[in-house]
Image 1 (cartoon, rainbow, N blue to C red):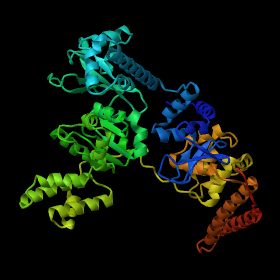
Image 2 (cartoon, rainbow, N blue to C red; image 1 turned 60 degrees about the vertical axis):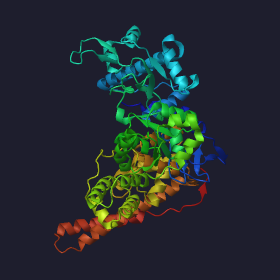
Image 3 (cartoon, rainbow, N blue to C red; image 1 turned 30 degrees about the vertical axis):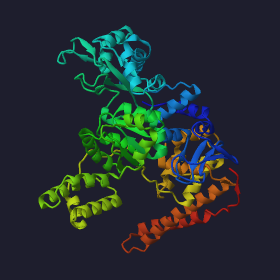
Image 4 (cartoon, helix red, strand yellow; image 1 turned 90 degrees about the vertical axis):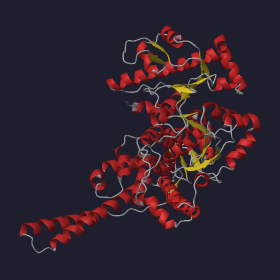
Length: 602
């Protein structure tokens, strides 16, 4: 599926980049442009520049930059189609995507499931907030310190103690049997018979809607009111076309901005823990769906932070969850600390009993994972026993093998070797021989940007002029540029600029062109967009272009003259090469340099 180019240009034209970025954080005027502290890296002096004339942004500190779409993509951590839809909704423009038949059917099915989930969340919420059936759940939440406004903010709900309550309601709203089953909100009585009766998955439970990171309800988690009921404490939606448990972090739609600003994520086990922390102002929090982190969840988290503070319960299950999370977190180069809860406490109970400050002290003093872990492991091992010591060394080595960052790996190796009283070189050898726990390969989701080679000064100048000046662009496109540039390295970006159907005078057209580039290319182009133009751009372009052509002709002349010096040539080949040499010398003579002069304001 694709969004038509004309729609993208319309959305770009309707969204002033200064207004869009200014809605996220304040911008200060600096001459013709606006400036701010860059939201993408730590700095003390503003280097983040927004140009209302060019409708682009660029940070001269970290290099990030591009169109209004690039800003929303990077700031909101969403993909390009989502950014287009978000900006279109901001100005009330419809977006109709072009889809093939099969894609269209899949898209419509997904939209129907999203609508069912949104409607279901509203039904559960009304049960909790407005109906008698939710009285017991309201009392329970009140005891847990969850007030009405908090329940409303998180869209908490209640599933009544009924086998068919939700199914009958969904059917009355026009949802078909197939849709209700596909949502995972209902189960077949006989899993082996597709035509058998179905019933509600969630019954007599507080309902926590699970949102994706753009705020759409994609699943639910249900918690029992009475922990002694014999039922599982939590049950979650099954995997559906909308929901893959190992890919989603609870609360991310609300907490991602705080994660970025803190560059640290506090990871807790349950939804109530997360909500309690968030509502007292500790907002850089997430919770996995379950306890242990998966590779995909760790990869998502790595987009936002460099550090993770694990805040699982202090019981045996919490300890196991910590250990099961390690491989995924370490293989994504995340720094890990461990905040150990007091016995019998969890984050929710701790902040209710002792307040925010006590919890923050616990987080601030949380030790590095390996310091914590080494002490835990060695305290349970008789280090006087060589057999026990070697087994512990092997266990520790297997985990350290997951650490890919060289400096961290070396430091951890020396820490463990010192604690076990063994030679660091011997332990390092054991680590290198230990198989790391493979949890999946990193994919090209954009979390690691591929560096783009900067073109030469001459090529960069031609790129700038071809982007910014109509006469220059017209001149270059009249040349035999495809053949000429095929003989020059690092001209891919100039080729893209000359191939594009763009208008240098139209910011919306330039915004659309930038959406066709890689993030690295877009960063380079955004910097070019803010450069001063020379006073005589077309003349300078002719000079640079002639210089390139002269360089190409000189190389061709060198090759021809070198071949003439060869001994094994026929008379015909000698005559042909002599003609080629004369022709190349004539072309070089005709390409006389121009003279460049002063610059003009952009």
